[in-house]
Amino acid sequence: MTETAATPILDAGSLAGRRALVTGSSRGVGADTVRYFAEAGADVVVNFRNKAPRAEKLGAQLRELGVRALVQGADLTDEASVAGMMADIKAEFGGLDILVLNASGGMESGMAEDYALQLNRDAQLRVLDAALPLMGEGSRVVFVTSHQAHFIRTTPTMPEYEAVALSKRAGEDALRERIPALAERGIGFVVVSGDMIEGTVTATLLNRMNPGALEERREQAGKLYNVAEFAAEVARAAVDEVPADNTRLVGDVTSFG
Image 1 (cartoon, rainbow, N blue to C red):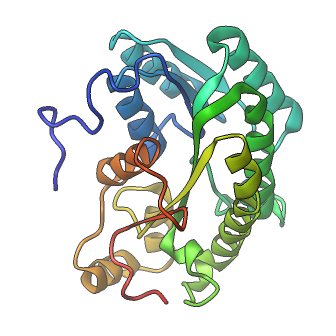
Image 2 (cartoon, rainbow, N blue to C red; image 1 turned 180 degrees about the horizontal axis):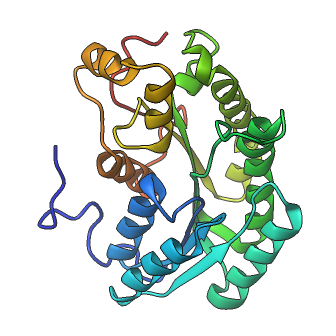
């Protein structure tokens, strides 16, 4: 289904008074997710690593919706950088109600050999631990991943993506170990796993390295979600009832076991 302005992703005003941080939200799925939160009335944090002008532009657009938008640059692999971001969020908003762990990577060139694991596992735990003092009962944590990573233990992926997929699955596993402790604090946790997403940087890179991969997956699945459609599922995961298995699967999974 194609979302339109006439059919808001989340009910207008449903997040009024709530505060949401989406990591990696200056573009793509993160940007659309943080926009959906703002459209529902939430005060939001736009987080970026090195694209300040783009993040500032988005922040300005979100403020026009009548909400507060805090634009925060932070290197999630750096403890001091993450701590600084959380200190600013506490000073500006007083706390957090929604944390979407969307930022990921590992296919960048020129990075350390273990960069994918640093970002997709270690940084996810670092951000969660730094955010927890700001989060109270009724809060929600959402981790965004891909079917190629979520099912990597049982379904091989293309060689170009394997290291990233394994690191994202390691991150998911580490976060899942926190579910009992989060539940004790009244904080819900959901993993949102999606198929290859049309228009994302990862899909574009994979298709460049493995020409035809995107078209082949589209034929297998029958349909691939675009960025806005997948972001809508991420946004809903922040407000819908937590599934019994803490997992929201988006798109076809018949090719994955």
